[in-house]
Structures are given as C-alpha cells and as structure tokens.
Length: 383
Image 1 (tube, rainbow, N blue to C red):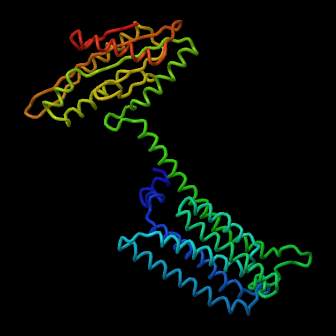
Image 2 (image 1 turned 120 degrees about the horizontal axis):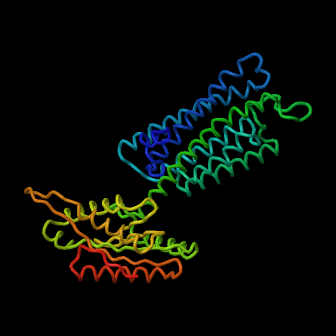
Image 3 (image 1 turned 135 degrees about the vertical axis):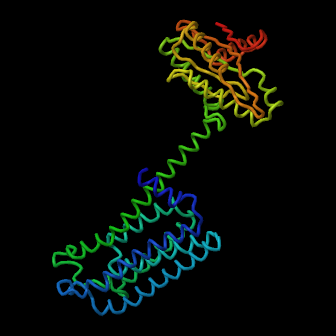
C-alpha cells in the first residue's frame, strides 16, 4: 500500500469532507504557518548578525498582533473541533476559515512587503487549491477581500501614510537590488505555502481521478456479475466490427441465454437467481480467450464477441461455453442441487462480407430463438 492509499485509509477523500472538517483542516495548517512566523519574529532579530535587518521598534508593536492572531487561530480550532463533535455542518465555517486565512495573510505580507514572493505565492496558489477543495463562493469572497486589502494597503503605502515592509530594515541595497538576507527570508516564508499547495493539490486531484475512474467503472459495469453492461458491450461490438472491416478480419457474435431462468427465480427466489447469474458469468469469463469480450446484455442474456474467429472456430468455442455453463452446480437448502444449461445463438461474418452491428445482433438473436425453440441447451449458428 503506497503513501497515498495509506492517507486515504486514514483521512478519507477530502472532496467528501464536511464543511466543518475542511475549515478545521485549513485553520490547523494556518496555525502551523503562524508558528513559523512567530518563531522567526521572536528568534531571528535577536541574533547579532541579523539584527541590522530588522526594525526593532516595529517588531515590538507587531509582536503582540502576531500573538493575538495565533490565539484567534487557536480559538477557531476549538470552535471547529467542537462543531465536528456536535456533527454540526454548515458552509459558514468554510466562509469563516477562508476569509480569515485570506485577509490575515495580507497583514503578514504587509509586515515584510506586499510586493514580495510569499504574497504572490499565497494570492495565486491559495485560490487555485481553494477552488478545488472549498466552496467556490467562499474562496471567491476571501480572494476578493484579500485583493481589496492589498490594494488599500498598497495605496496607503504609496501615499506615505503607511511604511512599506515595516518589520524590515535594509530591504534593498544601494544598487536597488533586494537584500540577499530578505531574498532568502522570502524563500523561507514561501516554501511552506508551496509545499502545502503542491501536496494538497496532488492528493486531492489524485482522489478526484480515482473517483472519476470508479464512476467510469460503475457506468460500464454490471454491478451483480462484474461483467460490462449492455451499453458497454455494444460499444465494444461497434469497435470490433469497425476493426473487422478495417483489417478484413472475421468476427463472430454469440448470444447466450440461461434456460428456465424464470422458473429458478419463481421456485427459489431472486437471491438464488442472482447467484446463478454470478456463477454463469464466471463460467463465461473462464472459457473465453483473453481478447474476447462478454457482457450482460439484459436479464439472463449475455453477449459474447469473438474477434478473429471464423464460423467453425467460433462454433467450437460456443460449444465450450455451453458445456462450461452446464457443468455449473449450485447447492441449495435441504441438500438439493441446481444445475444450469444455456441456449446459444451464434453468427459470424467473413473478412470479405462485413455486416453492420444491427445485423449481427439480429442474426445472433434469431439463432438464439431457434435454439430455444428446438429444445434449448444447444448452439445454433446463423451465417
């Protein structure tokens, strides 16, 4: 079991999470990021070689705000955790979490420079993941609010009413290039966001692909027998017929009908009837070649496609199918046993005389009707 499947077993599919759980997940991630910001703010300016890069007066003012924001995040963790325990689920939690995440990130970005790499990563990356993971309106509201906040703060900075990057000193060198220290700091700030965005997007999209594959499988598969359903087997017949014409190869089709199936259902119930269908489908699959196709055509009928077989070869394989189904024995309550039989109608087209799918189905169905009329448990061929 790979890491992705282990995660899925443990946390499930994020696309199916409740709004409360999604909000709690976002706040937990944010709380971790805020811890990084706080550790950076409390430790780095006190190091002698880095002291010159910080505005100590501004740090004293903003430290309290950092602490308060982390306490708010802790409070939201408690609220969303309490909501999950109470099985409370409402889009309000997604709106609250995304709006809080977006707007407060603008404040953190303002502290170190709104035109910096971390701000760009969050403004671009967070909505992309958000639209996949959260309610779209909640993400749109958070994005617009954050963008508006960035615009207002940028305007106030431009007008000189607010300082740009108030925590930073010596942000630019004399040649107007970004200070190597702050360039490295920006990379450090952006890294957790990039890692989280990448990991979360990868995981969610992978689960999305798995869900699409499952949906596609169920749309093409008969849930009882595990064979392809009527729509899919007809699509496969269409493909094989076209290939037969294109490659001038023979093609054979067999219609299989279980004998006296209605009597089995009436006598023993639908549960036994379902078990009979499962056993018959297994016998069919085990008899066919690897590149043959079999699907449940409807009720107790199965459609078998035999590419590349001439009439005699296909008849021999159809006979093996009849024998294999006849060998199926099912134990019933009271020590009784139920044996099966099937009637088969077959048609073949040669490489030089191709026919349409509708004609193939009609000929196989006519041959099946003759097999049932002539006593059942036999193969009838119509060429």
